Image (cartoon, rainbow, N blue to C red):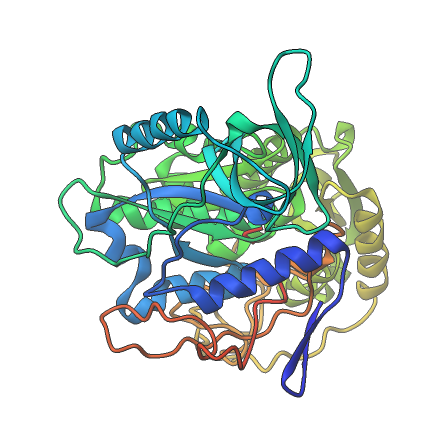
Amino acid sequence: ALEYIGPYAYIIGTGLERRSTMALLEQVQLSSVGGIPEVPAVLDRICTQMDVPGEASGIVIGKRRSTMNAIEEETKTLTFWVPKKPKLQAEEDTKKSEEDKKELEVKEGMIMEGKHEGKKGIRWFKAHIIEVLPTGEDGKKKVKVRWDYDEDETSEMPVEDLREPQEEPAFEEKKDEEGAVKPIAIFGEDRARKRVQLKIMNQVLMKCPDYYEDLEKAASDSVLTVEKCKLTPDEIKICSQERRDTACRAAGCICEPVGDFWLLAGTDSERALGQDYLKWVSMESPSVTDANERVDVDMLMVPQEKKNNLNEDVLADVEDDTETFIFFDDGADAVGMENSVRLLVCGRDEARRGDAVAQLTRRQDEKPESKNIKSDEEDDYGYKGGGSSSWKKQSYGEKSSSEYDKGGGQSWPSKKKWADDADSWSSKPKKKSWEDDGDDFDYSSWGDKSGKSKSSWGGGGGGG
């Protein structure tokens, strides 16, 4: 958690969470025109980096950074441009550092840079030598160091993995060139970062339609696999964004439009459920023939005379409260129950499905409250007031204009926030405000450079 009390910021959490929060706040304060010189090692665990073609960077960020600000606000993440050295230059730097180490003399108390090899390649971080160790059996001289980014972390490493401190390159915003690549770093919870990655890919394809040769490969990583939704273009047109988001939330997967496709991200079982649920959403008249055998579906037989009590507003309330996916299908007709209709409650969580069934059982006997929908003409969202809308047109849970941006394509609100994750390193997201630095894209960081930040990103923990 991050809270401001007077002029001071108080950070609460485990040691790693506090260090991560401090490191991220430092990046916000040190950022220049939306970029940072490098990603501190302590933030690697909450960072995803991806390349953006220079010619598409403008549409990715948006005018005065409006697009990226909206994405960050929605996903509770932060993004920065980061520099990328050309491959040949990186190889030359590595070769030079190897030559320098042959004559390197080390003493206790010296500040050096230590080599770290990870999934992002070879990187160097400041280290304080706290002890010079005896030469090992392999003939290599070793030292014990304390890392600058984490005072509690020490390591033993060979002297050959040290080098003299290098001057940190300043980040400079350069004019985009044809074919240039601009890496962007995304900070947040795993799934939040994946959502941002997919949203950025979609923006890139608007400018560079052929940029990604293989969408699924480009979007997948060691944490979350990505696959294309199996719906046809015509089936996709039937699915409203709200129903799509509700179905995928219940399945536990991420679903984002990227180019001409929908991409699903999650575990194998989450993606499989997402594919099934989206198929049902795309049906004009839903029919789930294997509902009795499925472990992710509960059923409720509703008398015909009580069906109107479970209208789309009621179902939307229950879905939102239990993170389930609920709809009527033709199951009762299939078994000859003419006086009943079958209501399916879908979701990966058995307890939440049980809660939903209990609520629906109670509410089928209650007259639904009026949602103040126009009865004789279409409301602001294009639906007729009064009775139920068709499966094709309806979007359970449409709220008032004060709650949704009708033109912004806002997704279904989820009660699960980033801060609910036990692994998150802070809580209580606060609204961001970006200073106006006068250029085309408002890249400035929160708060002023003096450190007196007016708000913080302390709400996240992806990504998000």
